[in-house]
Image 1 (cartoon, rainbow, N blue to C red):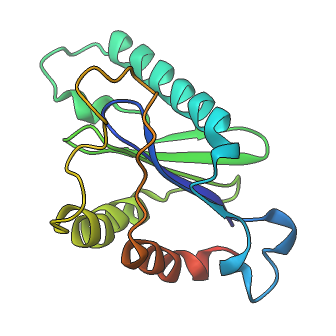
Image 2 (cartoon, rainbow, N blue to C red; image 1 turned 30 degrees about the vertical axis):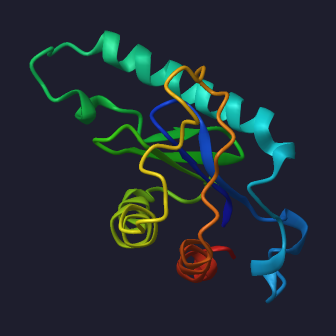
Image 3 (cartoon, rainbow, N blue to C red; image 1 turned 120 degrees about the vertical axis):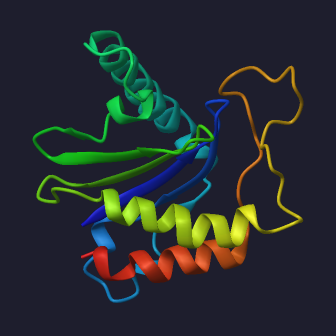
Length: 166
């Protein structure tokens, strides 16, 4: 079961967030339940990114081989007793994060598919979409307000994730 999906840019800004309502996930109309890019989840997003950023920094410092590619030492999954956080960092500094129930072991292929087939198609190749979601070069880390609102991206993402919601 998937609880939420997040995308953070290289400036630590949450550029997309989708959360599904837990009480209604057994309903066949679960797609409409929950929130997309809700301002109420800003603090949760900051905590989530901060946790992943901190753990990733620790793994980089503990890495025994400095000559290896740094992307190979990134956090890929964090588990607690009730949920699991799956992460993927792109070469451009984007973080794709999926929060699922504890039973799900590996969603790395799902995150890779979302990035390469949905994000690239509807956000990167869209000439009207910004290539950088920061408002200006002086924007402080984590203070961004631009979000992905491309309806084709949202519809494709939800259609792809729908079978995994239950």
